[in-house]
Amino acid sequence: MSADTHNSVRVWDPLTGELVGGPVKGDEVRTKFAALRFGPVELARASGRGVVPATERTRALIVDVGGERVRVIDPDTDLVVFEFTQPPDPPESIGPRVFGEAGVRLSGGIAGFVTARFSGLVELWAPTRPQLVPKRWRWRRHDLAHGCFGGDLAVLDPGSGGSHLAVNRRRAIAVWDVTARRQVARIDLDAPIDTLAPVPLASGPLLAVGVGCGLDAGVQVCDPYRGQLVGEVFNRHGPAFGQQGYKSSIMALTAVPGPEGTVRVASGSHDGVVRISPPIGKASDLAFTN
Image 1 (cartoon, rainbow, N blue to C red):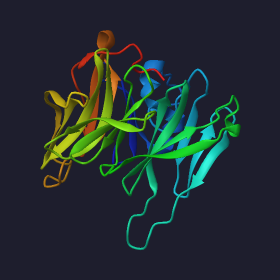
Image 2: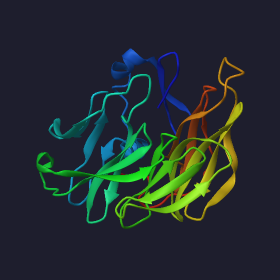
Image 3: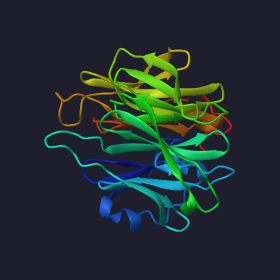
């Protein structure tokens, strides 16, 4: 699904790149798209952010970052099971407010979530006594990383032992083991990083990185564990639409299912175009599932 600056929404088929719904004005989305039915492949990545993933011991929960509070909601009951207050912004500056979140799996069959603050701090929120009823959970905060200046997080699945978290540090990416709360990998890049997205391949997780340089922007795949770039820049985007002198940036980035069990990468930029790459490789067994 994509949206533009004219408040129009479109729905696309990631396998073919064809338009399947829209354009529809934002206030008509609910009624116009009510008849559309999505399978689990198309909707799976929607749970990548703002959701504490379900595990064998705990159910899925929603993380809602608001202007005044950060809330954890049980979608089965619509009850707030945990919340904390956002700090006020200092005068004429940006304070330590939470602006980003991502659900993560921890070892022991439980899950939690991480938050990123404008101050550069990344925190892990983990349940200490998870029970069947989320209202009775107790949450503990752990400082996980400092220097999340790029404002982007990506969750990687290494296959066992819980999630890894990739943190955008402007021209570098740090990868953290969220269960052990320690950094396990890092890769430095020559260009500023706009955004990150996990690429779940059968051979191991990679990262798609949106990079911008001057009036051009594109996507680069990297292996943060080996500290290597993989292939050339692709999905190149031009200058901002209608503003030829404006710097181009990758504003949206995600992995999508490709034909015959492969993975492709979709990106959107200031040029108003959504680009979908050729297949990157074979998808992992758990790719595009929640």
